[in-house]
Length: 69
Length: 436
Image 1 (tube, each protein chain N blue to C red):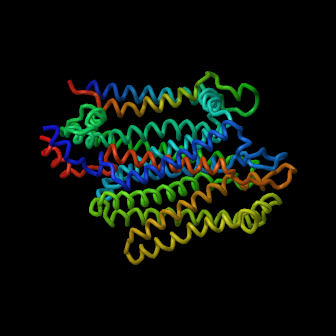
Image 2: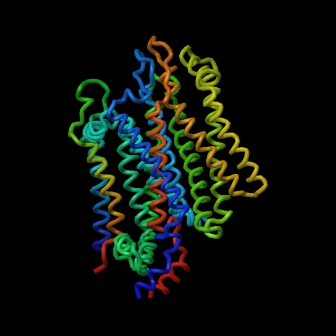
Image 3: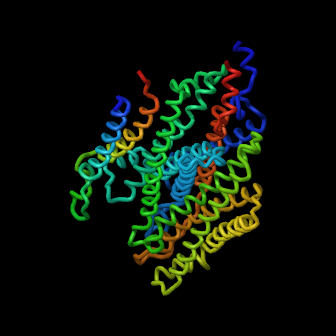
């Protein structure tokens, strides 16, 4: 596989991991009672989720724009 | 020589400033200024300058026309990118002429949607920061605002940028005042067979990735209302699908109107032919039929043995305070349905009637969005408070005018810095030869 392909897939994976982690681990847990259900386990987890989306879609930019050697 | 080439106009009216264009821009700028003044009043006096008041004790509505506009603009964006993605996924060549304007419409509508949220917040900075800091995944707001406004806007920008790179590269070879801008956009694109193949792959996968993303995003916007169990009129399983379908209706209506304006202004009768309008008309007809079915189901549900609060709400909608808006909205959806059905049956797609239908469905969509947001707050109180009321203030109306005008300004400006319609392969080859 070319460097272009490797970096693109890497970016998609990093984006996906960021989205999954921030949604299921970093953000507030899926429960309805108690203070611990209200606050995220990691502050700014929603921002990390958005960052994941941005990184994943940026892979398309990299794949298209990166120059061939 | 560059001086000689400078005299040759760029295609699609890019760079050439006409009187008609200047008049539209001036009108848009005036409207935008009205909106800015309205927002300045709101910021100075506080939210009391709007018609919104607390639920219950103040017998008002905390979500008013701004939230109706958020839902409306995000809906418009949905159809834009859907149509653009479908065109590129299924190679619907007759619709290529409207692909880019659909992409531009998506980006502009999302920006307006984001601004409509901002103007609704008493403390916008705090609101935006806290959303990215504390939003809970269980809340539909997480999906709505993180996916719709951030991820989906970014994805749409990437899509627009990449699908327009080839045209940017063609225009960058030609001396003009915008050459540097085109060069920057092209980012080294040389239109080699490898690059074309790569671009096709990327746009295919992007389109494939964006479609599920936007269905999730729009469904979660419907869930903002549909999951509120204590709010008669909102709670229901139909909210999410109805949101998606009405989003399609308003967005396709917008594309039809925009396509007709561009076609007329740039003399693109062949590029955006009647068959393209026919396809859009059929698509709109299908979406309208589905949405009208939802409306019938909704009405039957609320009038069939309703509870006390549901009955109060249904009376307000069908024969009370909101009846004029409800039946007006239904009429502005039924009339275009009949027009489109008649054109589909006779197979005569008239652009004028399609534009009329596009405008009417958008009026209907705004009315329906307003009816989704407001009546459940004023007439759907489960707590023992009296019936409330909400009327948008002049400030809110000024901001509304400003948002629509800003949208017109952004699209008008885009038309002068970049072709709003894809350059045809032959046309771009011709341009390349001239430039050489």
